[in-house]
Length: 432
Image 1 (cartoon, rainbow, N blue to C red):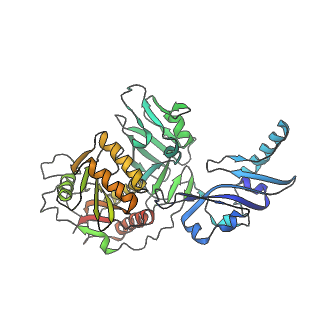
Image 2 (image 1 turned 30 degrees about the vertical axis):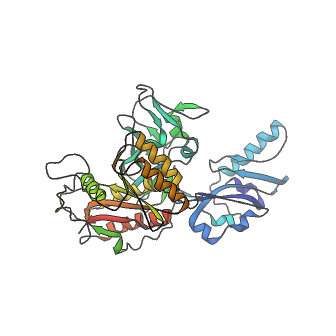
Image 3 (image 1 turned 90 degrees about the horizontal axis):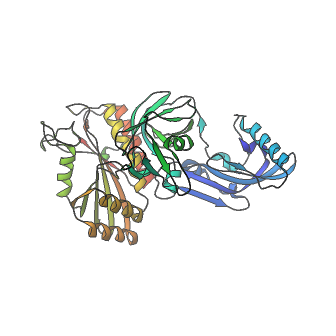
């Protein structure tokens, strides 16, 4: 809206923000030049939302510069006295109160800025921290029990429920779950429901978790993989039309003696899904199998292997069925589809995966096969050779033969999201 102050604008720094969280190719692009906006292509418009801008244009007082950051900061390179600064602030404020869409006449108009919405258009299936958390790496402390102190990114965000006006999210990893409520019409948008004294610190400042949530919060992902941040909706451009039949693979869970309702732990009706997958992976060609099921997990299982000059990391996310027999329950599909949001953030480089995986192994995750030397060797090889990051979603509650259109559409969204983010198609382990 502040761009309304400029006529005939020209932009010499343009930020393009990848709308696919965790994209390992390019998360943020900066174009610089005398007319950087002219370099924005139609393809860019399919992959990126608008990031920061810095340019110049005509105003009633002559030529002026204007910059806008991704955190909604507005600035101008100009000198003057305090009354002139106050007048400039008032002028910008007038433009900010005008919600009419701004058309600059340049190619930055191709880049989506998100649309303001008054309701949540579809079910919330996942959440990810605001990108600021990945830059400043905040540390969270429970001031009532200082044994709970950890990196914010090691905490899990679990969607409990959602409707057209709100979403309830639980934060796991600090003892009892911390309930956070998001309201589309809230002031602020995020509120801590649990009455606990939680602080959050960066290298320069310490404040409460409530203050951090008010300033940044997190992104919510909807069933079609659109992204909602506060009241700004960034619609998905993914093609959700078809789910390739080859993406669905089945195991004979009955023959394996699996209680498909039990994700992990003991059951009087058979072994858990985790136990079945662990047995399957230990006897596979994988060189390394890591069990990482706990707060802040990369995935339930992480495997590494090398073949024909390609180092492959495959992550497995498992969910229990919502009923004793395989069927086509929408709830089962939503649960497993929501797992892709947190898995792809580790897909960027072998080096970042090595750092995170070794950190997890040093703090409680366990080897089912292989050891540290194999992890380091394979991921060092991956830096030199070809590296592939694969995702497998495990949900024995979904039946291939009973698959309905609503469930297929949800799985297609997860399929396309992973493919667009990692460049490699995922697979689903389900029932016949």
